[in-house]
Amino acid sequence: MAVELNQLAAYCNDFLEVEAVTDFCPQGLQVEGRSPVRSIVSGVTACQALLDEAVAAEADLVLVHHGYFWKGEDPRVVGMKGRRLRTLLRNDLSLLAYHLPLDRHPVVGNNAELMRVLEVEGAVPFGRLGGVAIGMGGQLATPTDPGVFLERVEGRLETRILHVAGPQERIQRVALCSGGAPDLVEEAAEAGYDCYLTGESNERSTHMAREMGIHFIAAGHHATERFGAAALGRHLAGEFGLQHRFVDIPNPA
Image 1 (cartoon, rainbow, N blue to C red):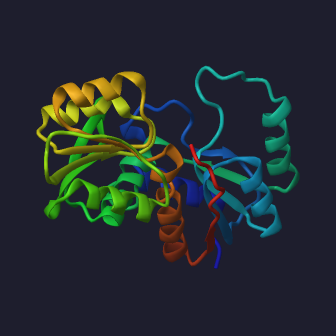
Image 2: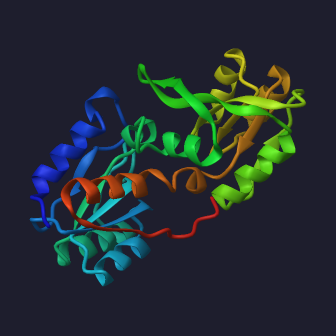
C-alpha cells in the first residue's frame, strides 16, 4: 500500500500534536522527496550512516527523532550537512523529523516507551518545558532494590549508566525524561520521586541529586531515545499499510 507524502506528514503532525510545544528545530517534513510513500526507514538521528541504509533499502522516507536545522547552528549547506542533504535530494528521499513532540507522546513517545521497557506503571506528566510536560513519572509494581533496577536499565537499554546513589534503600516512584534533561532531577526530588532517569548528566546534576536525596541515572542520550522513532514507524506501517524498518546506528553517547 501507499500514502501521499503530504497526507502522511499531516497525519504525523496531528497525531504528535506538534503545535502544543515550542521546539528547537522545525518539526515534521524537513526535506521533501518522492510521493507516494510505500517504505520507511526510521532511526534516532539523520546521520549519514542512516541515510545510506535508507538508500540501500530503496526507502521512500527517513523518519527520525533528530533531524536538521537546529536553532543557532550554521545555516550554510556545506561540508557534512551538504553531503547529507545531497544524499536525500539525489535519491528523492524525504526526511520527517520529530523532536520534543516524539519525546512526550503518550503512546509512541520515547518516554512512554521507556516506561514500558523498564516496567514503570501509571504514567503521569512530569518535567515542564515551554509550558508543557515533556517527561513522565510512575511507579514500579513493588519497591525494588536499587541494584536490581540499575541492572534492568543497563540490560534493557543495552547501555552503561552513570548512577548517583540516593538514600532510599528501595526504588518505587520513578520519573524519567529521555535525552538531555539532567536539571529535571531537582523537580523530580521536589515531587517526591525515589529515582530520576534521563540520558545525560552534567556537573551540577550530581550535586543536586546528592543534596536533594534522590537516585539519579544517566543512561545515555541515544539509549534513552532509541524507541520512539521505531514505535512511530510501526504505528504508521499499521495505519497505512507501509513497509517499515528501524535501523539502530550505534552511538555510545
